[in-house]
Image (cartoon, rainbow, N blue to C red):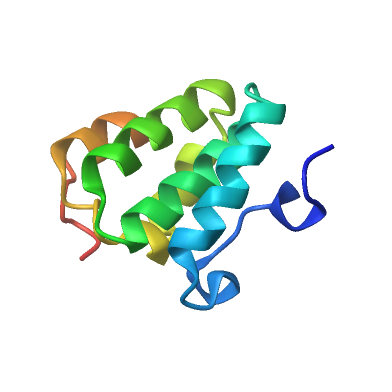
Length: 103
């Protein structure tokens, strides 16, 4: 069973600077529950926070495919600031043509 702490959206404040180690736990959760979009979203947040833009975008895409309602929250989530200006972010979140608008 996946860790209870990863059952919800995890922000950078919850990561407490442990982004890389938290990613290991999230990856374990994803392995145990590969269809859980929340875990993929958490991984995207951690990767974005660590500057791993391509990985973050790919995991955000997968998360939104599994849970489309995550797209709206992603637009406002400060953990995704590092990828917010990427055109792919706008495409994933359905905000086409607004890249960088919230920055």
